[in-house]
Amino acid sequence: MDEPHVCQELLHINEGQNQLAEAAYRAKVSERLAHQPRPTRFARFKSRLGWPSGTGALLVLALMTAGVAILPTRNGNRADSSSPARVYETTNARLIPASRKITAGEFMVGAKGYFAYRFSIEPDMYEPTITLRFDGAAQDTHDLTALVVDERESAQWARHDPVKILWSTGNGPINRTFEFKLPPGTYYLAVSNQFSLVDKVVSIDLELNYKSMDTRR
Image 1 (spheres, rainbow, N blue to C red):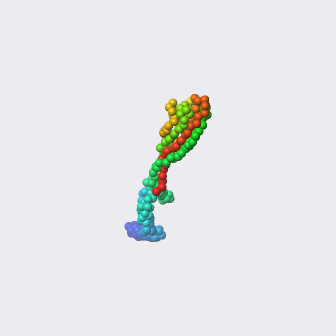
Image 2 (cartoon, rainbow, N blue to C red):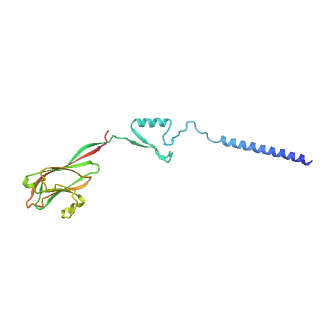
Image 3 (spheres, rainbow, N blue to C red):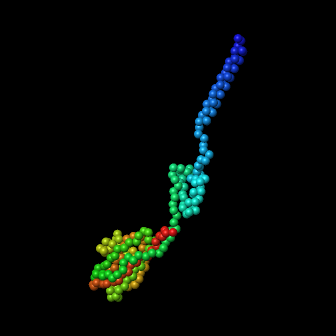
């Protein structure tokens, strides 16, 4: 057998082997694809913000119409399917006027002494205003003074140490009505009779006016 004839036969053998290998590879790929699960036609999808589509979109629309706010949970730019949307019920909150009688009655203030009454303004009391009325005989009230100090400084005031006076009647007569504002906190109303050698009787009416948060529909 001459050399050109041998080369031609070897070429035909290599081509036949390549065709068989290619056919085997195609069959293997086809078999692998046949065993992969196909995606269902009615697969559920979510948008970037986490809003459901299809039936879920109708549910969201119904909840929003009923007055319920739905906030989607976000994780960067992708919706986190493991964290459900947080649902908050909206309310129509408003401020309404309210008042509280702190104390009312007659009190004796000893000679060279004082009378003190503790009261508090809560944090949920908005725009609090104190209305304070004194009443009594002129000879019993003309030399009385009244003031308000913070609870934390009441002991220092009682020892006549310097403290911050938040409000006072000053040097004028107290037999009248006063109105002033204080922030939330705990205070002492003190009525001093330090300039008199006799006991005094005075009528005190202390009222707190404020606004309260009403969350009823």
